[in-house]
Amino acid sequence: MRWVNPDTGGADAVTPFEPTSVQMVAPCREFQVRANVGGRDEEVYGTACREADGSWRVIDTHGPR
Image (cartoon, rainbow, N blue to C red; front, side, top):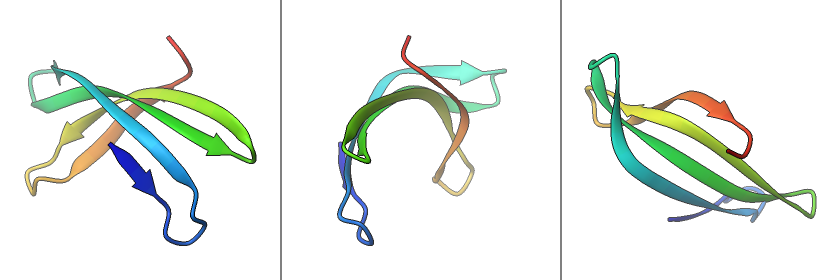
């Protein structure tokens, strides 16, 4: 999934992975974000969980696996 920052024009790519559950509370997914920051490509991995209102909340991020 591609995301473009409307303020800066910077573009990122988000790749969701297989679903997982954190403490069986909410549906969660691991993800990867690839972004170009200051002319350098960066990768960040993390976990996001779906909130009751349908939005996603990032609960964890870390560097490459």
